Image 1 (tube, helix red, strand yellow):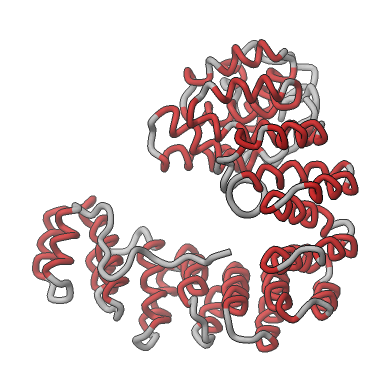
Image 2 (image 1 turned 135 degrees about the vertical axis):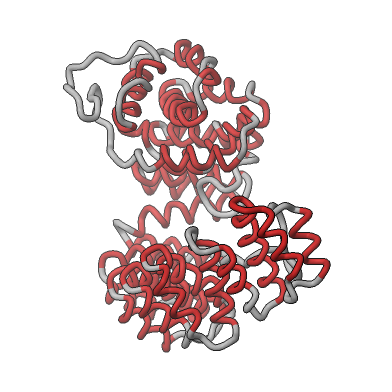
Length: 459
């Protein structure tokens, strides 16, 4: 099998596969996602034609998917499936696709993505026609097919997309930016840019609206790593947020090679694009030099992009020294303290739960302490439940307090429902309404008061 058959499979296993297979089988999204993530972790070894991971390269291909999946080791199973599908005709792939539902969920996720990836190379229109018979679940197979098609024959993939845009109207969350058809356009453009950037650019410029901007941004993302000057020229043709995002993509790629060059590039950008680009670049620098990245924050104006940079630096710093990262974050002024503190405490609690708790308890009342407690409760799985609830009760924000208490209660109810119920009933911190919601939910669902969940960082 050509190596292009594995392009994008990791992302698909984590996203599209979970949705497609959960929809087909009716199993929970959590189970599907967990299975997809497990399979995704094993996609990092590039396949060789005719080879089986960890085995003699002369070993014959498996007779069917069940035989391939009986091999010990995930990588060996993936290679066996790729060897199997590489030798199949379109008709044989169609027959094999009809048997996917006989497989257990995790194996079905792996096999389906590899099968559709191969099918998309040799008979993409046949694969798309089969996907159309899958009902709503077919939309999750189409991204795999389209990307495989575009990786080997982008011109015809582009022609099909132009003539049949409705086939890809539900590809939200896959490929390029935004939602809808521009994702499909972005997928084709990115693959085409690997083979022939000029032809990809010409095609992208023939499009309109979101399709055009999505395709151009995907091309820019590809060029940014190999020809940043060309990428910047192309980005200059965009406008508004599309342009700012494109410049950010270039700065990020440049920073991964040489931060000084990225910084010099950012200085040449229009003023309205600089903070976005610097935020992306600092996120990269923070992986290797978080203190150096933190020192650069002073050059950024307060606002959304500075907040993003703080969160990115905190996340990178937390991997190396969560205590130092926590101390730094606690001194920052940001509208997104939850985004900045969350990765720090999550990383710290995973390494040294007691150390993280000691730091939290030493913080004064306020947003920093509240956000740290909330994250600690969600990530520290082995804490004493009663002590955890008492910690949650000290959160000053009512909505966050009720959510954290509810989450801690769920765990306690799994261990000792009677004790957890008695504690909640006697609580002087919770309102009667909050107590009712928590107890009626049995520790499940939405326990909030005053808002719908923790905020997440936007794009």
